[in-house]
Image (tube, rainbow, N blue to C red; front, side, top):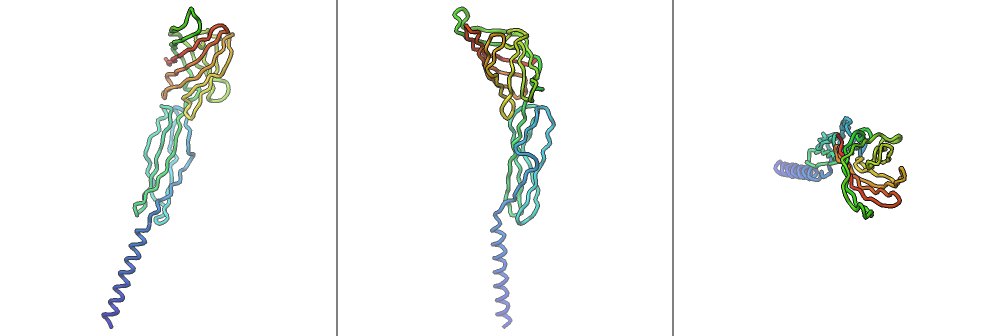
Amino acid sequence: MKSKLFSVLAILAVFGLLITTSCEEDDGTPPVIELKGDNPMTIDFGADFEDPGATAKDDEDGEVDVFVEGTVNTEAAGEYTLTYTATDEAGNVGTAKRTVFVTHTKSNISGNYVVNETFTSNNPNEPNGTWGPFNATITQGEEGKMSIRFNNFGDYGSSTIVNAELGGNTGRTVTIPLVVVGGITFEGSGSINASGTKIDINYTADDGTHLYTFTAIWEKN
C-alpha cells in the first residue's frame, strides 16, 4: 500500500511539475511600454532636450525596467528616433519608439548672409550667368515662429524684402509665395541644412519683360 501511495504521489508531483513548466513556457506576452510626454515631440533648434521617459508593465512580473537607445542633437535640425525596450523574466521583449523633431525657427535662421547665384533667362542679351557674391540678411517675420524675411533679395536693393515661411516637421524647407516687390514677381522654394548655416533657393524673377530663373546659395557669415 505504501509503495502504491508513493507511486501516486510521485505521479502527481511529476504532473504538477509538467503543468508548472507548461505554464512558464506559455508566457509569451511581452511587457507593455507606455511613453511619458508627447509622441512625436517637437523641440526648437538649440533648446535643451530632456527625455520624458517611459514605464513598462508585464502581465506576470508587474513593473519592469525600461531601457532607451538613441540620441537627440538639438544643434542639428532633423528627425530622431528613441527606442525603448523592456524585458520580462520569461525573456519576452516589449518595444516602443518616440519620434523627436528638432526644428529650425526664425530666430536661429536670422542673421547676415553672403549670397551667390547662377541664372538662366529668356533675355537674349543675358541668357545665363552668375551674380554675386553680395551681402543680404534674414530677419524674423512679424507673425508665427516660422515666418522670415529675406532682405536685399536677389541683390535688387535693400528695399526688396521678400517674406517666406519655414516648413516641414523640421523647418528645413523654405517657401516663397508668389509676391510682387518693386514691379518684380518672385516665387520659389528651397532647403536649409541641419545646422541652419546654408540655404539653397530656387526662384524666378519676372520683371514683366524677361523671366529669370535663379539658383541661389545663402551662407551665414
